[in-house]
Image (spheres, rainbow, N blue to C red):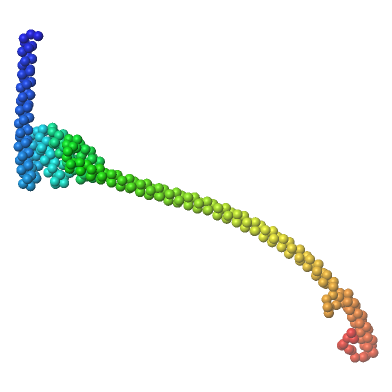
Length: 285
């Protein structure tokens, strides 16, 4: 290595050391300024001037990322005002910026408190556990962890019960739907059965009609036959004399006798005419 190279290396080393020194001094200056702003913000907050305190805390955070007190204190201010989303963001920022376990413990403890306010007990448990990892001796954090676990279990049990109730209601609804479906199928089968019965009744009615028609046909045949039988009976009745009624032969004999009598009378009349006797208008028979 020649002298020029050695000189150049020495120069670069000096410049790098000087730059680091400058950077360290700038960081220290920025941290000091951030700390002063944090004190101003704390004073404004103690005087209930939240707006001035918020402005100074934000300036302090912007000045130095190493100042974990500024975001932590601002997070507490938001927490007191029940602005939990803003509070959580500042506590998380403080936990990441903290270099000491004590500061990390406080940041995670307060993050757990925000989760408790949100009723997000699972995340609260994890935050309190992280806080205890940085300070296992803190009894308040331990108590909050036990409370978060108890509330988480209660919440899980209620959710499980709600889910069981929903499943039960769903099963009941499905059973009702199935019952309605079965009733509908039974109604359809019943309707089909009624239609079949109606069809059988219709067939029976048709058979009855056919039987009636056949019966009527037989009756008509009987009726047609009966007059013929009646005519034969009439002929027999005409041939057989009724009481107090002359038979045909008797009438013929009587007419023949009347004719003979009339002839005798006429002969007598003719004879009397000759003799000049009075004419009788009465018949001898």
